[in-house]
Length: 311
Image (tube, helix red, strand yellow):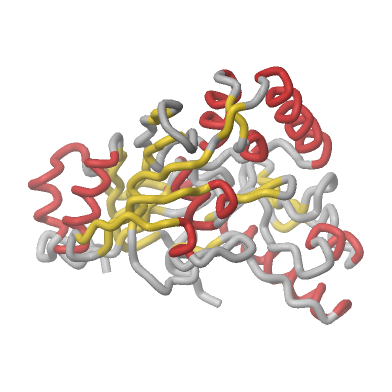
């Protein structure tokens, strides 16, 4: 069903948003893998108040929707998504050093690595690990993004969230029930959008902070590929690495269509230009089956499938 059919509630959204509401938009233009079919409707969000307004209306009108940031960590079906995508570009940040603990307050469309850089320029430590994370604050909070021994759950103080019924709350970090690359929200236990977040910082030496960040960036560049991808495809299983298992299974360099299991880091699937979401999907299922058959290890996805998939 197309939710933009004139006989359903999304007609009201046309009246509210006018030309701001884009229809039948290909998601390949909004994902880091550069794949994905059409979504019924798409709105670009520029502030936390816009996100609050749009999400509130979509819940009120019973229209399915998802909030995305940079478009990493998702695989959108070529069959598309029936509902509305909110592309979160709300990026205001405020660094606060007038009271303890020092912190940064950010809207959730802000790029996390950009916040880390802004803090470093002011000699503020605590987010060096995030210098290599290309996604947004909202995505980091939702999926507990992390790198180099730290993660969102170790840096977050609180976040403002909104749930259906336009109920807004401020959640302390522990309310998100973080685990490895997961949270209460990602597990689907609670339906909510994240409006803003506060991360803790502490005073440090600018040169030392920037040196640590550059070290992390150099390590990341030497070990992970460039090119269009979703980021890490699978979570690392306990005591092992997904990339090692995929390589040991003989799948490094495996190609389906125009998608390839990367030869530098096997936990990345690269789009060489003309790949489809189904190319990615078939590689993902091949990896999971082969690793299970060879090593009896079930690789859990770090990315999420979005849209209509036919297993």
